[in-house]
Image (cartoon, rainbow, N blue to C red; front, top):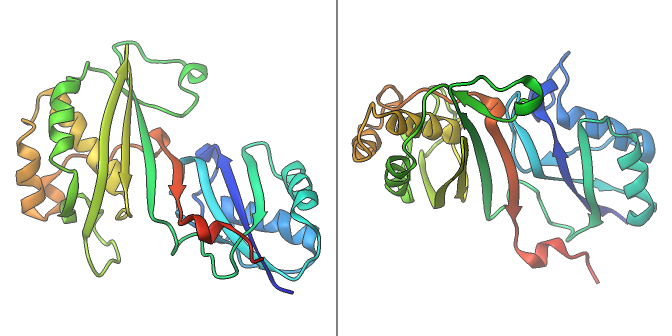
Length: 256
């Protein structure tokens, strides 16, 4: 009987060229699929929920694959977890609905972007490749006001990297929150889906607002322009982490 198996993964993206398998470079998808195939002893197709870019991290990446293997999930989980490299962690492995698909069934995703705003450069150990170091202090109230204008359903063409292969640039952002503690800032974005580099482009724009280059209200003009050149720079990848993905509960249950 064919089984559909879901994985919940976390990884440090620093040494990866993103999620998606590419020739002659190290990717998360290829590493995970390789370990699974060695254990299952057959080839698999591994579908991921988010094709994170090179340097982007994850705490809640989801993936699934089909298998004829009768190895129960409770035995397969430790075998896979043990054989994964140190920068990939398997949090969960379980059977799901036969038609579950990690990408197509996703209802919404939470991405967190971390910023270190300080006049002192953090050491490699302090930042651990997980925060964008900005030299100047940022006005969080201005950034929050600008972020509020991005909540809702909009045409985000101004925040899509040129060349994005999408029929529509309209997306819905459910929540856009900014939290700060001392010089450490977390930008949380929840949306039903994102354009290529959309989150990093929005964060780069909010940082320009926080620095005082633009007023919060200018974000509305950027949206209306529908032109990538109107928005701010693309924030670097190492500050971005995919935190979690929401799915319909019935899709996460195996058949009776």
